[in-house]
Length: 173
Image 1 (cartoon, rainbow, N blue to C red):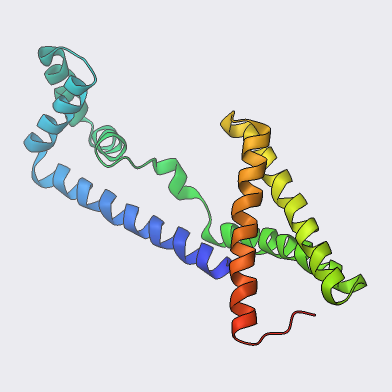
Image 2: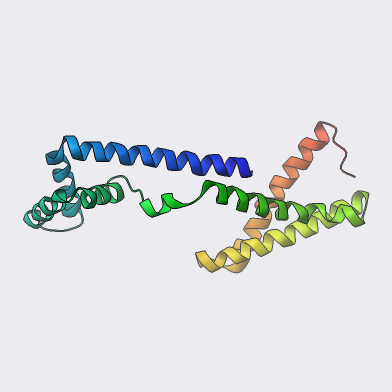
């Protein structure tokens, strides 16, 4: 998971950097076309056409300012987000997935067979509910709705994984 996180962040950063370079090249080779794009951006935001054209003319004189504006408004790229570390994201991903993996495995340290499976499901459901409930701090949704939705989808995924393991002959306990 950590390697997947690293490659995902790194690939996104590289893609955005290329798009930003292309935008800078367009500014250098076709400033008039870019000025028109900036004017359209301002006009689309509700400014009168004349004011949008004046502001675009001012912006195009300052290449870094024009570039920043086009990157943000035309490409939808927040340059500040590109400063994140792919390695840091990978480390956090590794730690969080490792901690998350302990929850369903812990019962197998003190129980065996069917009892371990039951405890594993209960521990997992509790952890999933807590995570789903915590998400409501950011979403504003109902604590119960988010908690039970997380439990439902998490247990469905676990059941599918368990079923595949049974089909291919993996012994759980």
